[in-house]
Image 1 (cartoon, each protein chain N blue to C red):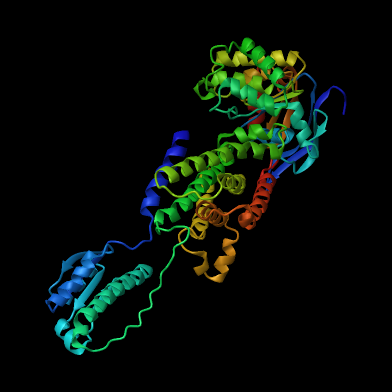
Image 2 (tube, chains in turn green, orange):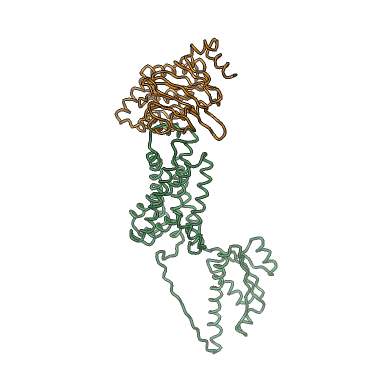
Length: 353
Length: 242
């Protein structure tokens, strides 16, 4: 069991951190070129040169291109109209038709921005190379913004994801193991034997907590090591602070797990309920989707989500180098949460039914 | 409560919804005796026993176990009794030695006491070979004998045994009863349920439960006379068939 507990999460960490990315890359791009001129070919070359697009196909007609999109072979169709080059040169104006598969709305939006950027660059080049010699004075009001990216200078997605996924693993393992624990003893029959002994309720709960608490901290250590060695995620803040927070956080999760375990009669029930909470906690943690974009009522719900605080603290301390005073709000809420959940765990453990 | 009474039960009742599992039973168990608690499956033996060991609250009625009240002092009862359940109740994934250490610790024995007890137990049961084996790898008969000894670790005044010899071969059953006698001779009160009527003959007193009520309660000898039966088996059949 112990190897499984350690190996599986670490495989998850390595796979998910590489795979779970919201970066839009390798967009399946196709085009219909009704013009076939040096201008149209130059535009296509620009797409080809971009790392965001894979120019997969040139279709003879829009109709064929549409059926290809229906089959899922391409996600973008750029249609270059007849007389594209001539219109540009003569009228200084032309249209391009772009069709984007928008089943994933957010991805389609990003794709649209990329396409526009490429067409703008092309546009500018057309202006400078072709329009200027005609002696028409064009005044460009070019405003360029120079972004400076803080805390993750290279915009490395893994830097953002690894701390979050590490949080998930620590939470999942400790929640499931503790959730199954007491109920397992109920099934085997050893719990009855324990209930006949004079053991105090809090002694029993502490005895159940401690091994999983230790396990969670060891998992965190191995995970941090992998984050540093394999993903080279910067660890800016204090390790001691991370461990301090995590050691309190794990108590919250274990309290929830033991509470579930006390209320259920079989491991299946416990597993089902643990999953219910896990899915809500994960999707409302701000790990994959920003909490700021959630509706108001959902934002209020996230206040009760321990994973939210853990994700915040890990990103703050690990990436921004936040100190003790910056994480006091999260730390105090988590601490209160831990006391409440473990109080409930002790209360719900009944030696006499 | 008289000085020589270990368990005193008065109109003890347990209802689950409309179903009366234990119906106003009353009896006394004397100190140091082996008390056989018989009854068919579903007669309410286990429910009654669970109330006496403080893990089930009675619906009504009263009982004193080792001088403590089951309604108000269940945790005090637990300090003075040992219990071995129907299901095997040691930890399968711990060794014999670890189980002894664990349960000794729960009952508040010091490390020194635990070591002494373990040494004594290993000698008596000749466990030298298996003391470091996982409990799950042992045959059932061994497990039951060890579980009984663990239930005696803290020198309880009363030991409750819930079908301790279920599924065990005749030789081991005999050895098991020798252990019971040994404990009884040291003054421990034994409260035992069983389905084996030959075992009932070994008891000092026997009660027979039918449908939640105690229908007979006396020494095996007197019960046989009363029901004009050859053996406890016949007594049981006459009662259970009603």
